[in-house]
Length: 119
Image 1: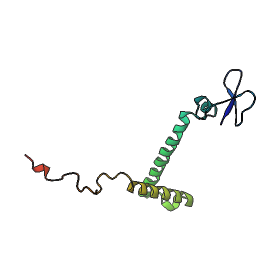
Image 2: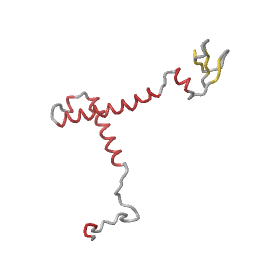
Image 3: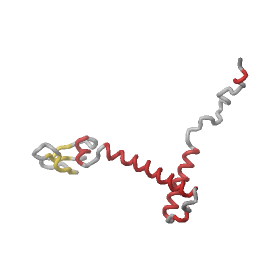
Image 4: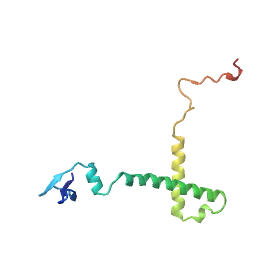
């Protein structure tokens, strides 16, 4: 439970775990508190950007390997292990993703009779 102390200008001056003289309680997610500790919405966007950038680098490495510019064995062992782990994870999640045309207990839902022969 964060407690804050404000400076003469009314801005948060310090953050404390316990209440003390001149401190006030502030809720965990309060925007003023988040700004004081440096957590802004822009900084949370960096996680998404980093994940996207990692995927780009991974695709570049795959392209270089496919074009025989580098071999997977040219990379350090740790890099190889991480690439294989990510590739394996993506393949597993792709297999478990939404299956639009899987068999159901209701039989064929889409009637695939010869629509091309209709007048």
